[in-house]
Image (cartoon, rainbow, N blue to C red):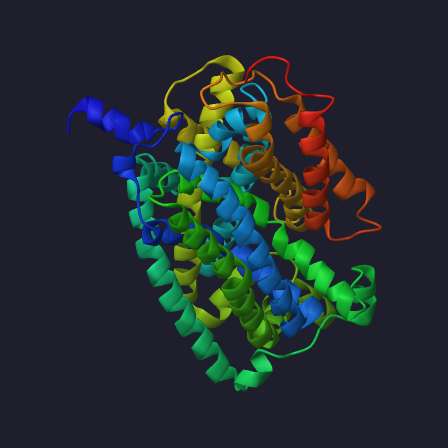
Length: 469
């Protein structure tokens, strides 16, 4: 292959529009959106949601989040389809301006690299658990080094390879996961109706502390837990939507990703945790010396509990599910992270070393994040950043569909800074999470409403551009 062609494949149009000749159909895009959302983290959220709210209330919340997430993802992905640009590059024209898009890149890069680090940590702990290894510096360097090399190698050659890897791994993952669920249900003797209808299982005192003592409180808890990923998925839909042949291709892909995340992963995670909980409690008591109370808490102590459940029950097959599930997501996480970092450094310091450098940098930053308590902080982490990424996606959508048609004409220069967009993201996120959450706990909905009010008012009013965009 000529060197120039190879360089073009690696660069993958990171800072430019994807040509029509390279666009893909809905199937290729859907494998990627579903692949990035079917992970151990999402299975854990399913287990947590069903234990807090009961299976039926949690599933109802999942359906609502699927609808909302699909609409936001399609709206954002459509902008990418029309422009051919990734989420953070199109933010230059819609919502943020050239310099302002650095904030969008920083927000998205931090979140997606955080997921990269989180999934790495889960894989690492799962491998230690499966092979009975101690958590030593040698094992950290060896395991994280191999994982990082894999993600870099599989992401280097752009969307075409990422799509192929995701489609193969997702197909195998779903088949093996289905086998695990059926085997688990049969071997534990739970009838099907019980697995998909059990009530809230946490003690009343814990539910009170979560604000989930009533059915409404349980539903709202699940909404906030599940919808935290919707904003990030909408931005991923944009990164993939730039490769769409038609708007409906990314619409279907957005729907597939939302269903995989908020219905399939929720239901499967709930079934696995419910059916495997007794044997997992016995394992923690017998091998770790925990009391029964402490062992019960450990079952939902963090995303690594799902890995433990798969490995304790499934053995080698469970390890296969864990490995494949994380691998396909990590390739996509690295891919999106490299795009956001490409834009961040381009607009902030005009540094364009090529996308490969940012593939490596994303993994290096992810390794650095492992020294924080990322597994323990996952619940608060996903809620806060979910609010911010929702604000980001909302401003892009509002600017494209509503505001830009009134303040700019096609072909005009792009503003260096759109203060209305930057102010809206910061203000709406802070108000919905820190100020209004006590009174209106559905932070995603509050963020959408605040953005819909603030951004048009600011952009068409006090912060209306005085120079051509």
